[in-house]
Amino acid sequence: MSFEVGLLLLFCLEVAGIYCAVLAVKHARTPQGSVAWIAFLLTVPIVAVPAYLFFGTFKFTGYVIGRRDSVRIVSGLERHRDANPPTQIQNQQIYNALEEIGDIPVTTGSNLELLIDGAATFEAIFAAIAKAQQYVLVQSYIINDDKIGGRLHDCLSESARAGVKVRLIYDAVGCAKLPRSYLESLQSNGIEVVNAHARRGPKSRFQINFRNHRKAVIIDGEVGFTGGLNMGDEYMGENPKFGPWRDTHARLQGSVVLQLQLVFAEDWHWATHEDLTPILNWQPSLAAANKDAVLVATGPGDDFDSGSFYFCTLINAATDRLWIASPYFVPENDILTALKLAAMRGVQVRILMPEVSDHKIPWLAALAYLDEVMEVGVEIWRYNQGFMHQKVVLVDDSITSVGTTNLDNRSCRLNFEETVVVFDKDLADETAAMLEADFDRSFRLTQSLSQRGFRQRQGAPIARLFSPLL
Image (cartoon, rainbow, N blue to C red; front, top):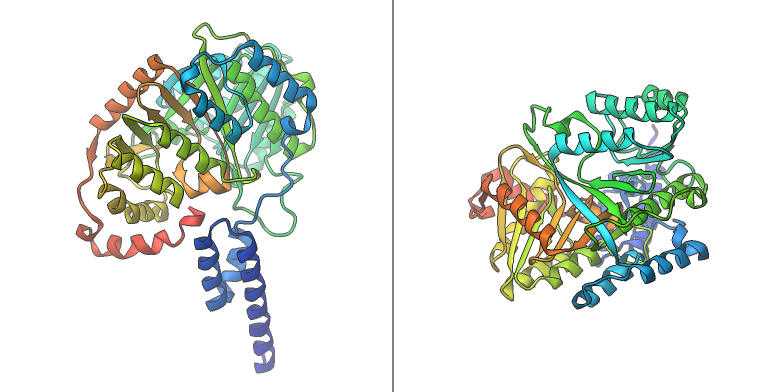
């Protein structure tokens, strides 16, 4: 390469860096994100420009929200709420906030059964699929071609051969290791298989940053599942790197299944432009438990940072107890402030996270936040009997949330997520007992970052610089 060509390439890189820096100013969701990208793009454009093309956090435009565009669906939800209004009027302000965040009304007539760990979760899911009469809807961020993935394949195939309509959404990033032959085999058995971003994803650049992290199974519009578990053997604790795998899923009945189904239909419409709503069951049987509940679906297609708003709503609602279980702790500033204020006003704030790392950079970044929250009384508990992957929030003795949303920037800003929020004392008591057992298998952290080894002391603040992407 001649000297002149090298200069030209360097000039082009600098111009590209400046152009991307302008885009970062316009599109980054936080000033901190803008500053980080600008510094990176202007100092090392040869690395930063390709990184920005993949990871720059543009608004995820064009995501079509089916319920917001369909008068029939909106009116149907309103009629369902009118027929099954929430019963706990003391929670009306929280209801109002969650309804604004997720654009789905709180209703009564729902039930949530906690499914603790892989064996209980997969047995419940596969048993429910085997009983399907009309249709099965499945969505998973990760599907592995292993024993659990094989059971999913066989179970769905058997349903399809029995005349049940089966549809599957997968995320291409989460399923990067899934062989094409697995998906082709499902299709050959009559199952409709769709990549979450297959047809209508961003066209202007390579885009792996926005991911559909939701996990859902819906059977005939009557039974639903969501929570922390993907489809793979590691969720059964069979990966020797992690040992026992601690996770929580939820079996749903009643009104909230309709809401879970609606979000699936939206994701299907986004990927295929096919409207499933006319052919699905929108009259689920009400659950005998009759609990107030709502599904909060969040993502980068929303007009505001709906994931952060969800966490802040539950944090600000706490008056006595706030327990959060999450495998990652990389909170954005609003959540960080809300957590510290909750502890300062006397709420018992406990954050449960794993001592074992599955992703090194988020694990290191979390260390840079812990001193800050512990100084104001937030309790940090480290689960050290295997890996903990659950996403559970408990507020006082009345609110339980189980879903796919981690306490990190990726879940709050970049991923499509969902979580079920239930307002019920009995369920809160069950959740508290479950988490207390987890605390018994954990230790309360007292060590500060300054007391850790050299690599962690130096690595944590560097990893925190990448927090907008974690």
